[in-house]
Length: 305
Image (tube, rainbow, N blue to C red; front, side, top):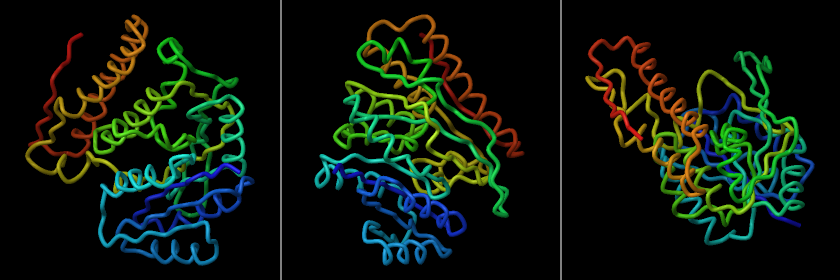
């Protein structure tokens, strides 16, 4: 059997975590271990995690006394030492796997000798009262295999699948220090996936929508992983809302470096990257405007080709 590591880092997820746990326990593929980290929650998250671990020995609980974003990196370094031949996947504490997520992604990966596979996603709104409504699906019409120059030539086809760490199955050996170094960056998730894809020889996109991203109006991952640009250092309630070249421009440059590793960047990909970059600037300017902070200063450097 092929062992799969599942990872979840949860903060104050008592309302949604039971649903996530049930989706993992319902997997048709059974050969997995699941590390669930309570990231210093102040609600019943810890009790839910440790109760689940008592009923299923495949669940390995961790309890942190405080919110520690760096634990994410520590976990992967530990995994690389102890589980290098395993596969791994991530599920957020408010999301769900479809029942055959592990079975189908692993089979697709093994059948096609892939280093990573992404699947389609159902995007769902949670009204807070138990009501779930599918708002859209992100899926291809047919499966896609990417290798060699395909990583550049088919960038527009698969780029949206690099936006998040979840909804994928990876060979753990693909997670190098280069990938881990992005876990504290702006758009850490996308940059980490790009670094993993860059290490990979073959990547696949499975057309089936097997992951459910559930929008609860608040992302638990914002509180547990990477830099939350809406609080702490990058606060819209202070004098400055600073998003400089170390954030937006660095993320943009990483995308350029990624595509450049496969040769000269095409005009089509340049136009696409420019649109992404403009979108990031707009997104953060809009956040500042909506904050109502009239003293805020938004700082960025325009990067020319």
